[in-house]
Length: 151
Ligand SMILES: Nc1nc2c(c(=O)[nH]1)N[C@H]1C(S)=C(S)[C@@H](COP(=O)(O)O)O[C@H]1N2
Ligand SMILES: [Mo]
Image (cartoon, rainbow, N blue to C red):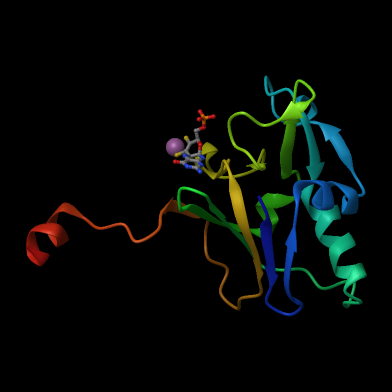
């Protein structure tokens, strides 16, 4: 399964989990950042820096948000300030993830545990003027009222 990564200024790329891992400068035991969650993870901010260097991008540029989307269309949009300790879990007990494959985001400094998105397959780095707060939920959510209305 491929993970697609998009940067508003640098464009698109597709990665396998092995390719994501190979680019990551900092690997860690997730327990060091998230109590009670064992497994191997790579640090997000330094991964982003490595990808930008590979693209020949301006090194001191930082996004305002990261948006992730999962296999089940669950998605989250997270301000960069909440991502300093963020990591992608890729392995537990020496094996690919059973829950959250291919990779799972953890945001230890995030405003909600709901931001720990499982089965991430799309990652977007955006640069926005307004500093929107963290949001999460399913794509194309339709309320009961709208369903009644559409019928
Ligand atoms: N792909 C995906 N990730 C998800 C969700 C989801 O529905 N789909 N739920 C989120 C919410 S609302 C919470 S509270 C946590 C729950 O994590 P857990 O299953 O490890 O307890 O996962 C988050 N990650
Ligand atoms: Mo949640």
